[in-house]
Amino acid sequence: MVRPRIYVSRRIQDSAIMLLRECCDVELYDSDYPPPKNILVKSLEDKDAALILLSDTIDREVFEKAGRLRVVSTMSAGYDHIDLKEATARGVYVTNVPSVLTDAVAEFALALLFSVARRVVEADRFLRRGSWKIAWSPMFMLGPEISGKTLGIVGLGAIGKAVASRAKGLNMRVIYFSRTRKPNVEAELGISYRPLNELLRESDFIVLSTALTPETVGMIGERELRSMKPSSYLVNISRGAVVDEKALVKALKKGWIAGAALDVFEKEPIDPDNPLISMDNVVLTPHMASATFEARRRLAEKAAENILSVLRGEAPPSLLNPEVMKVKPLETVRML
Figure 1 (cartoon, rainbow, N blue to C red):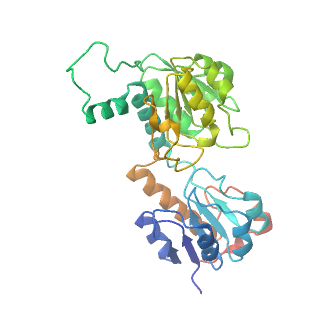
Figure 2: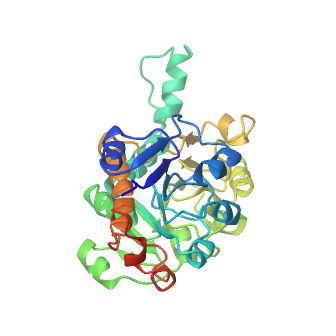
Figure 3: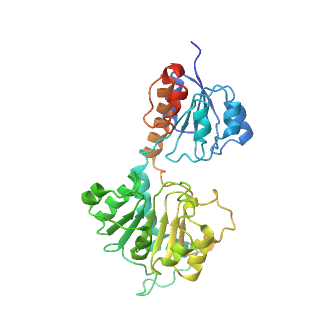
């Protein structure tokens, strides 16, 4: 039997590559940078499966050329970079990895919250540039305490729930907004539901952990930022497009909110002249919330296992387009 051919669009953890190479021929784009679109399209023309990342756009152009493609596995929870409708029409199974990053991202959300509120990054820069001249001063680098404050979480999926659980351990009052109320989680964690406008008004800290959908694009704009407390902080660990960055810059300059901490941006990487970079009351990180050894290894291995499941004719743990099974049943894609 001819071994299936797999394209991996980035340098990833060796353990995942080894899983694939046990039964497949693997072509690796051996770089930390994404392949240019023309290389991606060309590379997938003769492949049975692709393991890709968030920055790889898999659209109609790709699918039209990739006639052998049977499964696309994204090494991410998000999947808005893949045209699911086109994939389904062509009988291509699309999978993601939705749960292995939960703890890492939830931890990082709180790291960002502490960093911006307690001015950790600002203080580090202050010290390194030689500006520290007084050993201790009562009015120096003041910031709010976290304990006892109200945390508003927008999006109560697995990550939002994990953030809430950790925040309760910090003696924070937790409220949340989600498209659907979750009474069981409310009872389990001792948290309360609020409509978005009320959450924005009440919260001292807001963590965005919602998925990117047409409804959430620009969800936090000028009107929402104006309704927040002047003493409040915004933390975004979801997707950059959830926040209107121009409105956020305006809010920070005019003092509508006290600060922001962002791991995701409307454009990634951000432009060097982005005004957020020069603001002291902003903490910026390069989309690294899931960057733990453990989480990234699990992420890569699960993405590889999703491919192998489909090639074996088995239902993958996280199939994003179950309708594809009517177009091309699993037994017809069995290759291993």
